[in-house]
Length: 110
Image (cartoon, rainbow, N blue to C red; front, top):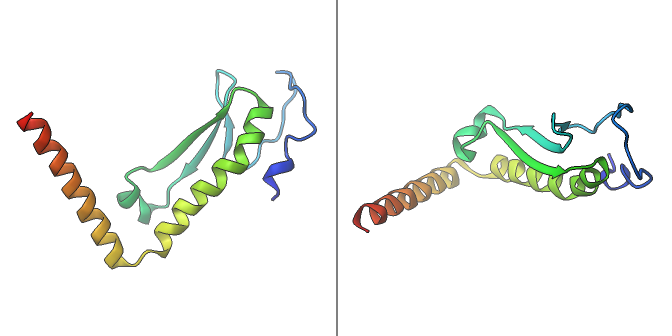
């Protein structure tokens, strides 16, 4: 799908016009648009979240302009996690845990 041209010809959107939004794009009750992507079960312990959200903008036009930047970043994050070996995952988790412990220790001693 060519994300870059979705909003190219749209100048305004009235509330009474229902638009078919691209995959992973949702309109919030306040009228703004948000990217919402569920994280696959196997990556949740590594990423630390079940769902990834990114604000796309307050208008349809803003959302369609932001989508080509946001979607590839989320895809890259998920693909990077899929490509890592088990050894790399263990190293990253251990590194994150040691950073957390170091931060906690620094807060206690400060």
